[in-house]
Amino acid sequence: MPREIHVRNPRTGTPDHTIVAAGDDEIIAAAGALRARQSAWAAQPVERRAEALRAFGDAVARHRDELVARLETDTGRRWVSQLEVDSVLTSIERTCRYAEAAFAPEDPAPTADPDVHVTGDLVPYPVVAVISPWNFPFQLALIDAVPALLAGSAVLLKPSEVTPRFIPVLRACVAEVEELAGVLTVVEGDGATGATMVAVADAVCFTGSVRTGRAVGRAAAEHFIPAFLELGGKDPAIVTASADLDAASSAILWGSTINSGHSCMSIERVYVDHAVVEEFTEALVAKAEQVELAYPDIGDGQIGPIISDAQVDVIREQLEEAVAKGAVIRTGGTIQYLGGGAYLRPTVLTGVDHSMRVMREETFGPIIPIMPFDGEDEAVTLANDTEFGLSAAVFAATAEQAAPVAHRLEAGAVSVNDVCLTGMFPEAEKNSFKSSGLGASRMGPPSVRRFLRRRALLMRGSAGIRPWYYDGTPTQTEER
Ligand code: NAD
Image 1 (cartoon, protein in one colour):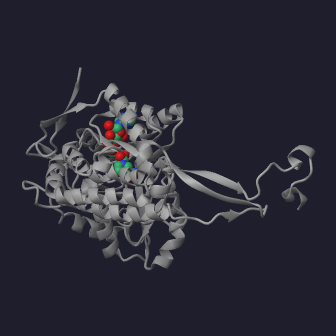
Image 2 (cartoon, protein in one colour):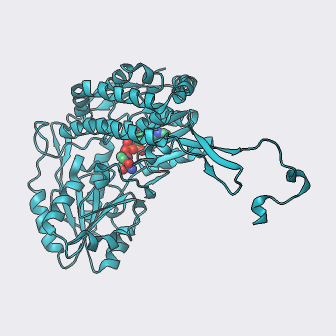
Image 3 (cartoon, helix red, strand yellow):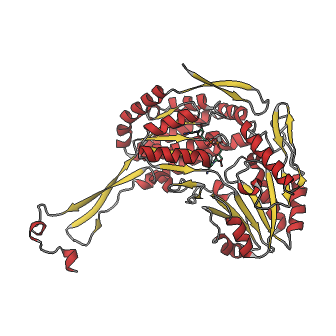
């Protein structure tokens, strides 16, 4: 029996789209077909794969308007959808360059024995499963798929069931590049579909919540495949007394509310030196009140609807609990239902502490809780008092003053005198710390290299087995 999934429109609140989840048989057959075609794909020079990916980029550019229109319906926001498609286009070119560098010829390296040299070749994982979330549906579907393909892997991709309307257009783009069509299969489905994918793949790239990431990690361990996990965050920002409060409040407002706070690296906790906390809060509240909802027209304002139904409940529960425990809402704070969509204006909270869920759990909404600190040590202790370690931000008068604080933060990327720079500068290699992820960096050159296993070739110049293998004569290394 085909399993249908009904998809809710975030602007109207009503289901207006249906997908059919790929069944186990379909997933198994797709993985088998990909595995059969992968070796020919990997055997080509990297330049040929890069050519295919660049052609795919051209197809995406040709379908840009259609993709943006679908993403608009999926997410209820316009300019973020445009940004997503455009960022994929630039990422393809950058990742092609990383791949070409990864496969650059290398000279054999000498060893302790002048007769033995080491070289090697790079062997991609045959089939990589890529499972992605709903917050940037197009960009996050391709962020791992593109480097895996360039490495020579075949990819079985499943975007989120919450935002799947763009999938047919993505498939059309793939179909326009014949070489790619055999090694990139996009399926529709939900968690059950994803779980089957993990069971048939040779490696899995998962972007999503910590909870699901742990389940994917356990399943990957069971199947003995590597899992590259990019999970949730609870990113702190530290504002020291010397910081430019105008610049810091603008950056933090943006970093907390971009995409309605539906960003893994959005600022979700703000720690401000007690000497400037009130001045900072007033500046932030004044700016937050200037932000408009993208309603009634999608082209209006900056804050779109909360995309996922489940997230509405998380945001509401965290707000209610914080207020019940003594938090003060300085602006915002009410989830409004407009035209069927759920919206929350930028919400600034003070009077918060670490007993509250809003300070401990991922919110994924436009809420900015502010807590004062007394001295650098307390700021660092508070920022590190979390299970997450995705990214962070530090503000001070100069980058040099902020850097010592940045070095003490348990996070994979720290923006200094700005926020979310990791999202804008994907050249920067980074790891996700603590529960925020596992595995090699998906930014920078390792984005491609992590899909390549190295087969070392240890080459002896003169043929033949040396007598000491049998008679106990010491090797050259042992003689030293
Ligand atoms: P989610 O964990 O609910 O789902 C993510 C994907 O996993 C979906 O495609 C879903 O169908 C699939 N899935 C669900 N159960 C599965 C299972 N048992 N096995 C395999 N796949 C399964 O996450 P979400 O709500 O879609 O996304 C929001 C989360 O993603 C947030 O926590 C956010 O911080 C995180 N995120 C992280 C990054 C990052 O780079 N670190 C980027 C974006 C989003």
